[in-house]
Length: 295
Image (cartoon, helix red, strand yellow):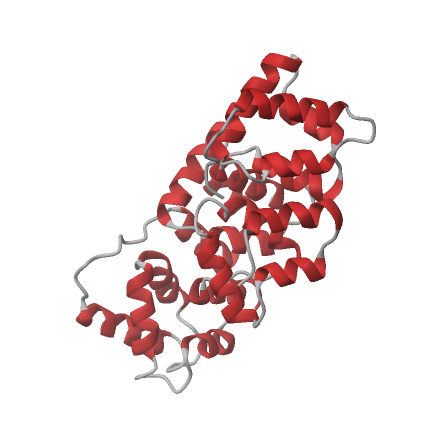
């Protein structure tokens, strides 16, 4: 999603007001406008709408839409960090924790994104993200998530440190496959503190020491939420099912092209085709608009 060229927020706000007031709600018009504008443009539309209608646009959309489409459109009205913070909060709310969402969000965001999410989380909920994560999880899984949320990951460097790559690859092997039991602490520090380009080289080098690649090693060494978390960190890919709204809303102005490529590489079919197969109606139309094209 990129900013639209001949943008007119007053006109968009007027069209949305008409679409909401229309008997039966003109969902298509709402989708057409909001999925084709950037986040900052949507904020301008919301400002103009409030001036016109004397009502907050988010509340108006809440009243007009329902189900998956409502969730998607309301998600678009937030900044990427606000959306991520809200999703994290709701994954830890009430009875039981939605570990899948926690893993997907904490393990796939960059250091800068996590720092921004923490700041916004504090502003929105008057609580520290670290505190909520530690209150809702336990054991090594909690230690890994907290290490990630602390955002201590190294910045990518132009200098390739071959010695450090080799040391890390050997340490991962010696802390896992090469011993009885797993030294999870060593794994956590390498997975959560090294830059992504460095880790990619470490995983490549790891094959020199271990008879199994890093993904096979993770499956052998750890189980449950910890296994899912390490695998997400190792492959940095995103699965389908219920996460499609979250991926598209939070990445459509960040790196959706990259996500589309990774998706096709991992699942053998395009994100666009998957949306076509698994969704329908206005919700599908909105997702396809944001997805931007087939691969």
